[in-house]
Image (cartoon, rainbow, N blue to C red; front, side, top):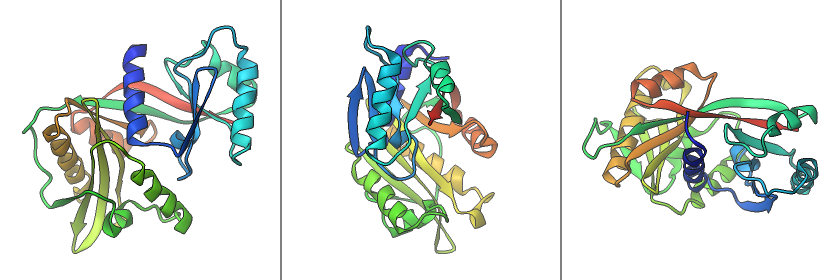
Length: 248
């Protein structure tokens, strides 16, 4: 698995690709808040911790910060989480382990691979893209919060949408930062699954990222999502580190 430095680089790239609306610092941890029903947007990163500070006291400050925003305290824990033993400390305080996930990476070479025929690229999330990636459970507020996340991206990025029979069937996003193409928001509408839509979106975004000078691509996927993991592995992605959340 990856070194602490490599995990930090991957997490920094993910932060630029999926930016929160608000941040704060507690004892070296970065607290994030941003709506959109996303734990990544509403959790504390734990890659650094200031020496001499009591972890229990710091956790209490994090809890107060999230409580003031009407949210449960949540910690994002990689293999490089600090201080050592934080996962067990949170478990002892009643925090539950949530959504164990993998970070997967593959190299990119300009001109390599298929372009994803039929996939359209957009510079902003138009209605077709939003319809392609929208979860049926999203209400108007959640759609607006997701659109707000995309509006906060400040690195080169593109939105891909695959139209089938004139309808938006699948979508995805690629953000290029510091030589890394970060892919996220990959989704295919249920009625279009198993028709190659996700492969087409993935191929188009990888080709765009390579053309933008990215030397590698990364994405995050829940460990339990076997179909998505199979898709990404077939496209050359390999797991390099893991993370999970502890939520109060």
